[in-house]
Each structure stands twice: as C-alpha cells, then as structure tokens.
Length: 301
Length: 301
Image (cartoon, helix red, strand yellow):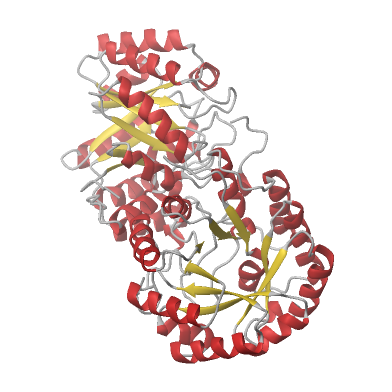
C-alpha cells in the first residue's frame, strides 16, 4: 500500500455540522467548540454560512461569529464560510472572511432544492460574484457528485461540465461532495479517475458523508487516487437540510485516528480533538455518529 | 480496482451480538431474529455459545435454541456455536451442532481474561477436543490478532505459531479476529500478507469490529489480500464481554450494502435484512451502531 507522508484535513463541523442542528446553539458554545478545534491545530476551517436566517436560523450569528474568530485566530487558521449568493459573499467579506465556499449541486434537482436555482443561474451568479469580489478565494463545493436523493446517479460528464465552467470563471478550488453518503469505494475510484484525467493539473478535495458507513473506505480509495485534502466534521456532525436521507460527515477524529495509525501525518492533536468532541456531546448533541467519541481512551491498543 | 465476483458473509449476531447484551432476551425473540436472518439467506450463522451460564447468562438457552434452529433450518443454513472447552463442544454436539468455534487469543493476557487459560492449556484442550469429537468441524477464532486491550500490538510470529499448532491438531478453519476494532487498513495488509505467505494453501476468514469506524475500509483491504469470507453481526451488535473498549461488529447490512453497490454478490437480501434490523431495534436495543439501520429506504440514491 503506497501512502502519502501527510494528508490535510479541513474541519467543516461549525458550518456543515451546526447547520443541521435544529435547536439553537449559543454563539459562545459555538466559539468554545471552534476554540477546541483551533487548539487541535486545524489550519483550515469552514466556520459558518452567510445564508438567510429564514432558510437556516442556526446560522443567524454568522457575522458576529466570523468577526470574532477571524480577529482571534487569523494567524493560526484560514477561515472559510459558505455563501449561497453574492449578497452572502459580500457579508462574508465585510466580516473579514477571505475564503468562501460556493455550492452548486451536480444534479439539477438538488440544486433547485438546495439553492433554488438552475445550473445556468448558479453559474451566472458565480461569474458575477467573481467579478465583484475578485480578491475573494472561492472554493466550489460540487454537491451530489456521487448520487442525488432525487435523481439517483449523476453523469460524470455533467460534473466535468460544471467544473470546467467554474474554472473558466476563476474559482480557486473544487471540492467533490458525496452529500448523501451514497458513494461506494468502486464508484469513488471510477468517478475520480474520470475527473482527474480530464483535469490533470487541478487538485481536488473530497467531502464525504458517512451515512452508510463507507466514509473511511472511500477516503482510502481517494488517497489512492491522489486526493490530498479531505473535509470532515468534529463528532461526525452534519448532513444536508435539503437532502432527505443525508446523515453526518465523516467524524474528524475518526479520520485523524485512521490516518495517524497508518503513519500518515495530519498535524492534528487527537487528544485535544476528542476533548472537543466532549464539548459537543455535553452541550450540543448527546448521540453522535462518531466512533472515536465512544472509544475508551484508557484502552492500551 | 480488481474485485471478486462474490464474497461470503457469515452472520454472528446471535452469538457475538446477543452475548454482549446484559438484559435477558427471550428465546422467542432470538428465534425471530434468526428467522429473519435465515430469510435474508445467510448460509452460515454463529448462533449461540455453549458457555457456563454464570460466565454469560444470556447464553443459558444455548441447548434449546440450537436444537430448535437445527431442526427448523438445517437444510438452509450451516449453524455454528462457540465453545470454550470440550464440555461445551459435547453439549453442542448433543444439540445437533456439527460446526463449532473454538477461541484462542493471540495475546496471552487476553486469553487468560477470556478463557482463563495459557496458550499451552488452550492448545492441549483443543487437541483433546479434536480427539474426542473427530467429526466436529472446528473453526479456530484467533482473537486480538491486530491488537490486545492489555498487551497492545501482538507479534505476527505468535499468531503464526498458534495457527500452525491448530492446523497440526486438525482444525478445519481459521478466522482472524480484530476483537477490539483497533486494526487499520495498512496493518490489515501487513498482517494478512505475513500470515498468508506463511500458509499459502490455507483460506482465512476475517472477523472485524467497527469500534473506530475502520471496519469497511479494512474489509476492502482484506478483499484485496484475497480474503473471501467475512463475519459480521446484524444491526452492528457485538463486542467482547472480557475486552475493555470493544464495540460492535461490522453491521451485516452495512457490508451487504457496500459489496452489492460495488457489484460484488453476497447472495443476501438487503431488504429482509433491514427488516430484521428493525426487530432488533424494536425488541432488543434502541441505539444501534449500524449505519444502514438509519438510512431512509425511500431515498432514491
């Protein structure tokens, strides 16, 4: 098994995790979790969404939260925020955010459900966003690449078309997302091979959900296909508020544990991360889909 | 990715799963779950343990249960029972069981904790058992092959020594067990390569726990190393009553889903299996570690 020396893990729990929790989480509690994640040494973190509070009330403190964490930790962490449109991107910029995530779903049905736009409309808005905020670093999250709750399988050609258009409009990064955790290892290999052969110069990251338990198996295949960056969420939080059947992200601590036990460096502190999982468990959510949340830390093996 | 046409899954939930549940489960409820598993088309099933009721009270109905299922389903399923010693093996034989699992832990400390014997004592008893019951098909479960809760890592030489001695005494099968779910994919490859190169003629099966979420990733590597048989438990039940930090087996439905979605035949009916998971959830245990137990079955992808 040929393995890389290191892998980058991007923490998305404060965005993808919290947005899926219905009960209001106090901003201070969110900040405590983020502090733990900073101390665990994440260098990149998706920290909130600049969405309309009516769509996702949990993210209504986006401005305050973004300003606070940027001021406090900007020397240690590159913070990113999800935005659905130019309006959100401008609000993010005003809050000190210099990296955003813009989402387009590879399946048009999910794009309609998620951001209420056609592919064409999403691309026009992206172009406009890049024009008005040329210095904003944009990561494109391509959702439902490996399957859509409404349309089923998604054609790779469609995915590649969206990637090409976004690159043409000047986006800096592309993250391929298994929004509903339906991808299997064989499919990961097939889709990644098809995409990377069409864009050999481009680096892609992977955002996988562990809905069906295949998360870490899929990471393993992703690594084999040359992926160097994976997005995960502390405590295995997450899902998609507009995709039926979507459960949590791969738990950050599960991935750190697997990679470090295989001798792959993540630069992260598993112990501090597990302490942060405890904050989530005690203050936000009792039952977690994380595995490492329940492992006896005294156990020798 | 080179994949086999089919993989055999052996259901061990009625043994490894039930034995880890403290509250008494009525024999009728156990039989309902087993009926579901038979209908889901498992061809091999570890169905109970012939252990002292003081050690594991949950298994006190071993005789009745074994007799019932053998009588009812012996044309469809090869039933197996775990035995800790000759006494248990004889009781199993009298109940109609013709295949047993005999456990030796690769680490001596866990062997003492689990069956209160040294390696030497375990091997002497195995020899005696094979002598007195020559027609009993014996599967050796080698526990803690990939790590011990008391000793940490276990030397492969020690594992190979126990395999060789057991083969010399006439056992028919060897199952390599990650009792506490600590193995990582790299280790699986290293250990399997070392063992199979020393026993190139022998087929091995794998019994993996999903404690740290690496279960399906480890299966993937196991398949790559030529393993054709995996033991799993319905609903992800399981653990080890005498190993701190051990959590559930890989859920049978999670493995069936992964393999079938990759085009690998299991011969199993995922829908009936998920219905059986519902029996477990409704009558035995609310919170399951299974992933497929919580997947929306209406979801198209």
